[in-house]
Each structure stands twice: as structure tokens, then as C-alpha cells.
Image: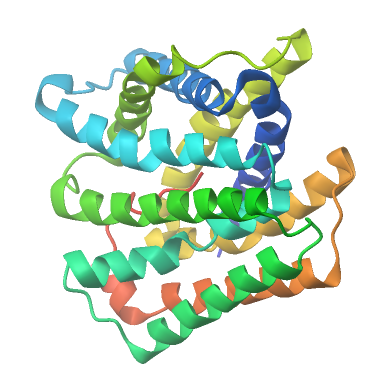
Length: 299
């Protein structure tokens, strides 16, 4: 791996790790739905402007259905669920649970695409379940029904990423990744708008909150997606997915430094088990051969 690619990989992990920190700041003020809506709407608008300035045709007439469906599965629902979880869970928790998305991708791929569920993948799935259970039951956040519901929201969001990956591979693999990244953000904004408009704002919208919203949208979505697709082009989809291993580490650090969230031994054990599970599932020759560019997008 070239030093430039390694730098991009680390930068992307740091950016997506920060997304969970930003949601912890914004969601208590705007609520889950408006946090997700503003993130995708601002990001999609900025990405669309970039695409138009650089002369790229978005092909809305031909691809609007794929943009809307993938945007709903890969951004609208997961971002809303992670924003909801941010009302209860530390940033590191959500990032670790987000790292289970390749595990769900393996199950969805086996069920929908007929991909082989190997012994290695099954071991990864079992390890991931143990890691999530260890984290939720024994981590620093006090065990409660609210914690369980928030953790379930994160797991459901990760499942949506798995479903989105399968859909992308089966229905929209012919669409150029930058077009799909931009169109899906706009599709997500349209899908969320009717629900967000009925959701009350929870607190005072200060200039600081708006700055964090812009960083969440422009940095953690718009810039991050373009970095991610550059990595896919340079390294391939499997190596680009190694960013999944680094995101929880950055989220834990950002949460501890800026929000004074606790990191204890049990948190690290749960994180290690989830990362190990992801490695077991992702790094297989069959995945390299079958993976489609742009599948299983993160955060």
C-alpha cells in the first residue's frame, strides 16, 4: 500500500469516527430525524454542485429509482437510527456496532445472492455476536432497556448497510460510484423529509450546533464518500473496507477526548472481538472476486 493510500485510509477512519462524536452533539438538539435529514441534504447538495461543476451527468431520469432505494437503505434509515442511538450510547459504542455491517453483509449475501457462507464466515458471525453482547452487557454504559434499544437501533442500521450492499451488487452495479454516492444522498434527503418535517426540534440551535451539522454533512459524508471511492479505485473494495477496523478506535478516542466518555477494559474487549469478526468475514478470496465497487458503504 502506498503512503498516500495509507494516509487516505487513516484520514477516512478519523473522519467517520468523528461522525459518531458529531451525532452525539447534534442529535440531542435537533432530534434523530433532523440530524439525519440535514446531514444527507447538505451533503447531497454539495456533492451535486461538485458533480455539475466537473461536468458529470447525474442521469437522474435513468437512475432515480436506484438513487432513492439505495439512499433509503444506505443513508436515510442508518443515519436516523445512529442519530437515535446517539441520544443514549457513547460514540464508541455506536462505532463498534457499526463495524458489524460486513457480518450482516455476509448473511444477506448468502440469503439473497447465493454467496457461500463458509466456516470462516460463520466463525466471524459468532465472534461478532459475542463481541456485541459483551460490549452492551459489560461496557461502561449502565445496562438498561434504553441501552438495549439504542444498541438494537445500531445493529439494525448495520443490517441496512448489508442489505444495501446486496442491492447495489444486484441492481445498480453498472452505475458509476460517484454518481451513486451523490444520487443516494439526495435520495435519502427526499426519503427523510416527510418524516423529519413532523419531528419537533429538541433544543436551541446555536451557531456551534450549526457548525457541527456542517462538519457532519460536508466532512463526514461529502468529503468522506469521495475519499472512499478513491480508495476503492486505487486499492479495490476489499482493502478499502479495512477502514472498518479503524473507525471504532478513532470514535473511542474522540469520545474520550472531547466528551469525556469512559473507555474501560470491557469496551476494548468488545471492540477487539467485533474487529476480529469483521476481519474473518471480509478477508477471503471469494469476497475479492465477488465484491462490487461501492457496496457496503459506511457511515
